[in-house]
Image 1 (cartoon, rainbow, N blue to C red):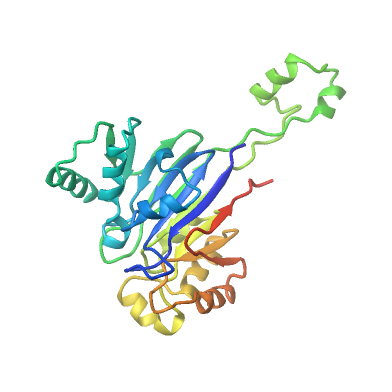
Image 2 (tube, rainbow, N blue to C red; image 1 turned 90 degrees about the vertical axis):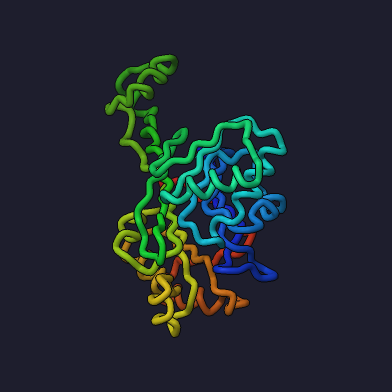
Length: 291
């Protein structure tokens, strides 16, 4: 069973503050790093975080607003200067390809490692990342990391009752998932990431039944009209999405710079969805496997 950890690298919306950088989240699965968004300064945050930048396998960009993608040029240049050789996959909206290709061409960077720029979904070792369109001012994706289901648990007592002696046969029965002695498969973990967006049905469906939903909460509810106009969410809106999607846990992020302290946003979300946390830069969350 693999370890799964979420590491927040940037939790501010629009512009950085003294305490928060702009958007980026690393999801680490048994050492493999999936980076979601790469705002300006993300590579500096990686230097201070318990995340190995050399282990980044794929980068997922939600949309092409600067606070979510301006860190890509610097990070890719550093990977080149550090002699990276393993392939890198970049996933995002259609405009991601011309953005990356023009940036590499105009800055005279020619990566010696393969870069695959592709639309979702993405298949990794033991997991899949799917996407769904969100409702923002420009095309935007939400993503969901779906861990493969785990094999059912082997019941030694049932095997003994059937007269099966300990030894190589146990492994064969486990590999074959023999229902006489092996329980049903156990659902893999699911982590959904939805930003930037106003509350929408697509986000609910993407996050349905997730162990964790990471959702933007740019404003408090007294700014609901502005949030809707700018295609963002309030903390209350994020909490309602979590409740409607029947997720286990909500982590809010992408806070407007007007809020030096996220406590008002957290209180607003918890009033609707109690199992809510507010992200901060370098906060780490270990995600246990469902029983």
